[in-house]
Length: 116
Length: 114
Image (cartoon, rainbow over all chains, first blue to last red; front, top):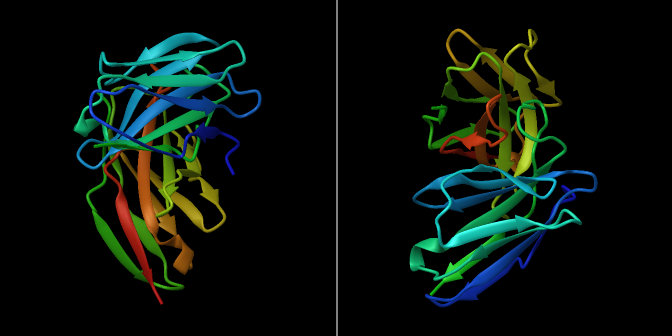
């Protein structure tokens, strides 16, 4: 158990809908990262938050947004869903922000999103 | 831009034997970190081992060791005494000092045969 929790574990929804994925980092970790794992794109970084502020953006679509709350949990919002958004979405946390290469990221169990 | 390449889509090994999973990387940074993660069929990502670019010794964690060859830009994972539970997808990843994100390779599916 990594200490990172994600809910829900599975989500099935229809095209055009909006969903929210939730992540609670390990106790004491200030950084939260979101990754998307799909068959065609592999594991891709989406976005990072550090202590409530956005720190880095990857290949995140405009239809997607995220935030980190004062209690450090984070939510990833996906809207106007398309079939291609079906993927495993991971949240990871680490103690450090940018520039600290030695801190490993601990991954949550992931949320499997299926868009039908 | 940083890039990680894992050229072995699938690998097979007999139980109790050692196996090497290949990883090469490309970066213009002098300071970077290399990571290996294991993803079993259940889906979770499990951190295995870390190697810093300035570390002089190869990293080891139990049955896992990292064969780090900086000049060749390779960071191969060696699993000794393979076990059936080692069957999983293995990802090599890199982090540069310019950011905290991890860049992942395509992964290698390891199958351990009894």
